[in-house]
Length: 481
Figure 1: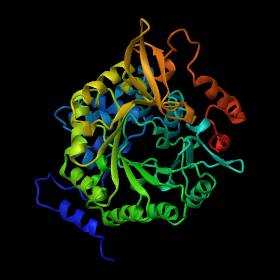
Figure 2: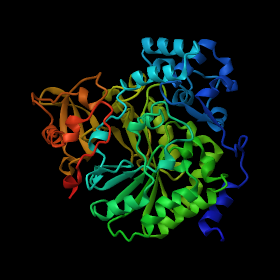
Figure 3: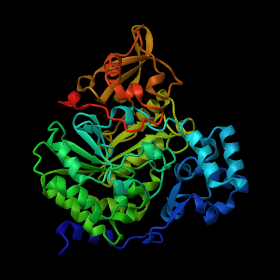
Figure 4: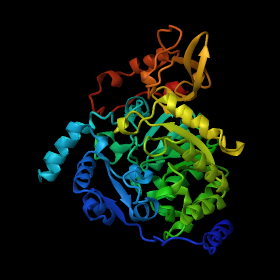
């Protein structure tokens, strides 16, 4: 089969002569067991590597040779942002937990004992924030559809079981339980037919988001088995398919030199040709991830299929809590034809204390960065919290009726009536999440809290579920019909 014309053009562009570093064509992964043999880590003190091994026993670690050799500036370690983004750091655990884990790991404790101690820590780290298991999992005939989430009326999230890992793990990742062996907290589904059947029963859904993990760790032939049923299902209400991926940053070769790169792009073209729009939701956390020639070639090839690239990332202390970094990243995205889309707030899970930035500071970074770019880059929305009731954006600090307040607004919500409605919280320069804020002007609660409380109280599973929230089936279908 001849390559589609746009893939051929993209290949020609990607292969155009240009200065580039050594090309990594073979994917080489590093996990916890490899920490001792990564050459660059030998420059660090032994106790630092020991701390990394201990943290990696609790929080998942995975990176690859491209990230290690091309994205990290080892002369800046430990302060290099990509190093902070991908390697475990001692400050991610409480000192007591760190000391205990170092003792177990370095002392040669049995694997079962290390795992047991790690579980104790993991379950204190709010493994599934924002009601993911309690309120997001839809059901069919009383049975939970474990590989799906349906939080917002128009959008369904689907978790392919073969896509439940990534080319490298972000240390801030809010889906870290997917990779830490917490099987009761893992979202995964093999059933593309189940997805189609659910969509047939829910005509309000206009968009499907394939997420994970990272769906693009799958071979294109496997991804096709999930995507093609949507193209042939004849769903008139379905308008778009989205794929959430960090591959353009952590393994851009997926679109350029991987053996099935052309077939992957051909699949993208087929989605566009079907009448649906395809958006690659690319997670770029720092401008360095966009600077390599292979990353830029990957974006050119993706855009050559007709797909849109939308870029998003959370604001992370020690990684990108700097307006200059965000402005540079947005300018690069626009120059490469991508769309700046979201600046998120670090979620209240995992090692949040190591990464979180106060909401007021996050808004200041966003505002300053926005003032440094042209209108084409001001498509980005934020700073946004993906909280239990919905996506809440911090619009800024204001003085209203003689009081200093935070102005907030829903960009997306469980109840569509909440979307776009402004509300106000007492000014708090230390608050890092919605549940730390208090309503302004003496109001007893925020306007959305009665509705959210009713949703929780209406679910017997919410009241009866154990800590790990097993086998949770929450009936949300009536909310969306």
